[in-house]
Image 1 (cartoon, rainbow, N blue to C red):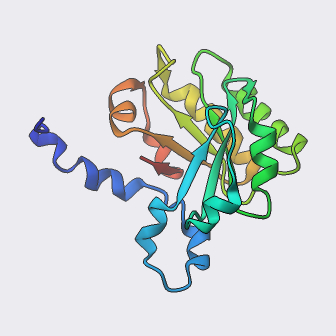
Image 2 (cartoon, helix red, strand yellow):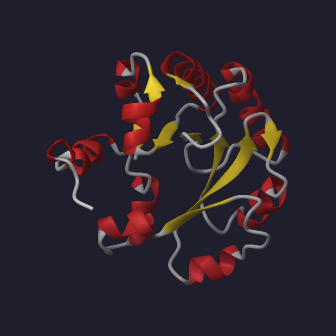
Length: 183
């Protein structure tokens, strides 16, 4: 597979907008290479039945993003993962955004779910925008969700794939430059 000529700079363009998730974590690195932090975290959801953050930390992991919601449905393992990671690894909740559902309700439910489980975490929340399970992706609706999450938590990261953002999210996306974009 050879990328189209227009794709050669895609990685560089994406890098300019990538939120360095490790910003808060870098302080813990104490002299280690900052770039290493890109690889020293993980996301976890119901698909990982068990997770041992003590073992993960011992293997060099520095943070964990834990799926709180799939649309408006609470991840069945969120409470377990959220509590077991507390005080061991910095945690951030993430919302697997579903365009077919009310964006405001999804943001509100993310906040309420975190509060019901002991707090909003140590890392910024993430709104996960994926083409899978989304027949459409409307930039205006995504904006509503992201803005509400930012209001509730004080910060937010938009996580998506380069081609999903470029090709599948329809509408004006200029507003997203005000937020951290993690490709």
